[in-house]
Length: 247
Image (cartoon, rainbow, N blue to C red; front, side, top):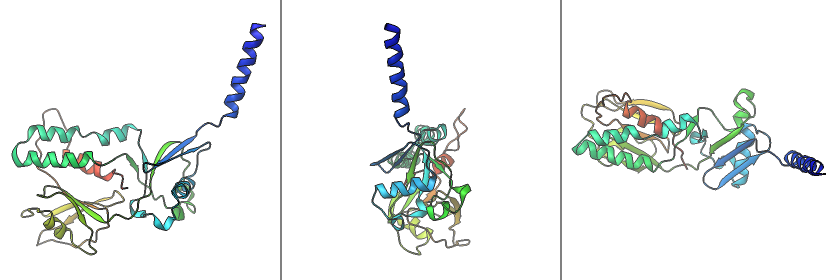
């Protein structure tokens, strides 16, 4: 009798497991969107589902900054680790130390994850099978509104966000942030897509480059080598900024 009861309970448990849909994929977006899928969705399906859940039309999305991210991965943990910046705060003094502190405070206010380098616009992915993978597991979709600012960080007197102005030069943004550009021939630009480039800014080599809203201009800070620590801190900061989420 007892064995029959155990068998019955076992069968019920198995049937319940079969009846309960298993979550094959979880997609988050912003802070208030959390979608579960019983079958792995295509990237295009996930984007459309998020847009629908947020009651948004695709034209409302700022596609230059739209992206697909992994939050729970070894790469995400490595990118988010700001220990190299804390090291620079420890080993530097005076003005340079204060600059690293300000940068550290700014970075801790950003959210980062592992950004997957791909176009997620459904108008593209739906007609390009190789660019429309199945999403299994946990993912984050960034479908931001168009930003209104440019961020200037690094070796400047007043780091922060500045109003985006059409056709304004990189040098002009740096001047607004109080940068001392004498002897500096180029600045680093991180586009909303996460792409990175060097832009000449000296009087003798300046080249105009149109920036997109949501871009970051970065002038590397002086850094000290630390015994037993081989990380290039400015390079780590740039990687961190490339993988930020734009709300």
